[in-house]
Image (cartoon, rainbow, N blue to C red; front, side):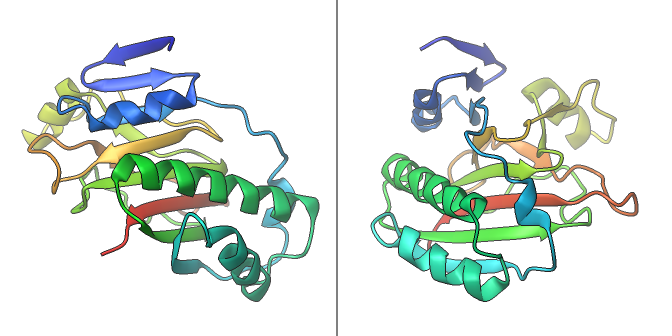
Length: 198
């Protein structure tokens, strides 16, 4: 694996990088990838947010129905997204060591989590299909923010990148991140979030 390690983060062009999150010292594991399909058609027209619990074996069928019910028009992009989500769910389920996955697919137009924070979960997979990706801090800057200072550098996931963030239930030094500031500027994001189901 050709990976770059930065302050307890592992970043690589190889999907196997995601498994590095199980190491105690790893806060964020990121797979930098180029999407194999064009997701922009999915942004046409109003759609509802999707929240469901599923398993790796059932998520493709569950998402096909959920996307139709949410208003996503039938298209090759919708089919490709469903396959991609099923693929990521299977990998995340294996890494997180859980069968049931809580899934959220949302079209975001606001700064839903605008402050840097850590999640009260064990692990969370985040990927943005359209729009700006999630912003995150290396350990040095996370400490600066905790001390009430501005970070020196803000990193972000690019479109298509997959990040698994370690939360407060798994580490005393969880991954610090936030939603990118897009409120009021007319931008939209298509965001996928996977958590172990409680």
